[in-house]
Length: 592
Picture 1 (spheres, rainbow, N blue to C red):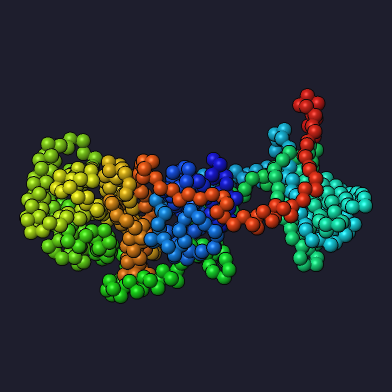
Picture 2 (picture 1 turned 90 degrees about the vertical axis):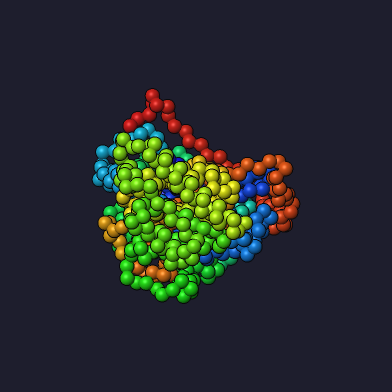
């Protein structure tokens, strides 16, 4: 599709921006995608800007934001943003191997290679061409030297059958050079020191940029010459002898893609997969912001405790992950419900929380019977009546506990709920049934944090979809769902990968707090454990009535237009040019 085709034209560190809600489409095309959403826009109410890149991880690149000092009347200055993720609504990290994109690239590359080896191309009947216009201002080189400059540039780049023509008048000078693969035409206005160059190629398209660079370098003596150029794709010329080779070069080179597909597809040398950087006024645009992040993580580790370097385990990682999430999203005076399996079975989530918060804030909820604990996702004869009775029993227990707490305090009682990684399938269904609305059967206030722990994402796939179902029921913003993967940094295709599926309701700054969780894990486990949010998604956008809409109104005249007006005033129209191609109709066109 058009997005995939355009993505192949980007530099490795390039970013594509698309307005309107194209997050789903862009996230399939790029490894990293973010949706920046603007409310209170003039005229159009709200607007989305979707950013995609294969090398820039936006979630971490915000650590190195650069203020380009662009005059702006709609958005606040960077330093005035409430947080770094102020405008973010959605974020995604896409694995091109998992979704099949790498297979498509492999197939495309193999097809390109077969075409390169195939000399039996059949002509499609079309002719392709590229036109480029180059302008040189303040250029004092006489145009009568241009013939030799043109001829040298063309011959050095392998163009053939070159012939030059010249003409002049009192005010201008023209020179033309014709090759078998195209032509160049130069015009000079003597009193303006202005030269216009047209390049029209119907062969050797891939040499267009080299030709432009050679001409500009030749005409930029002495310094002070300013140049601009543009090009358009147009029709070409029949009878060109290089068309078979040119045909194979039309379109982007798939082997130069920047997706993370492994070295069978990606040309990046092994061990050298760091993202490219670009510099702006000496400041790096770094996708990882490794230095500053590592420093912050070390400082954070001092608050959390000793750094652990003894490898990845779910039991070791959960206290940091769940503890940070609860500290960030759950009010201090509330309890956290942990839905476990049988009383005698392990409940790692509750044990992990007990290392970070007081035990009287943790309320363990157990499945009612062994028979319910043994129900499997693939069972077809599930006793729904038994699950319903257990749900009523659990609901009664929770209500009794919250009544006791409510008698002692007027505060919100339940602040969070966690489904343990060992909780059985029946308990997952009971957990799901309690949180399908913001208001629940236990209290009128929202439970701000819901978490489902999947100790191994390859096992019990149903754990992955549990929080998603609750998200679909509640639907509306303010709501954020995150999928955080935690695994060993040492790559092993057989390794265990833990997933935390997190739903945050009516919370501000959810992105920053998810980032805080990632950094806390990295800080505690130093170089052994890696945590990354694969997806952070907001809910359905809020509807705002006309009375609630408060746009920042401004007009074009509120910007300083002096420079633009001065440039427009200084422009001089020296001529008009039209391009035509005349060709025989199909009945008279020969095979050449």
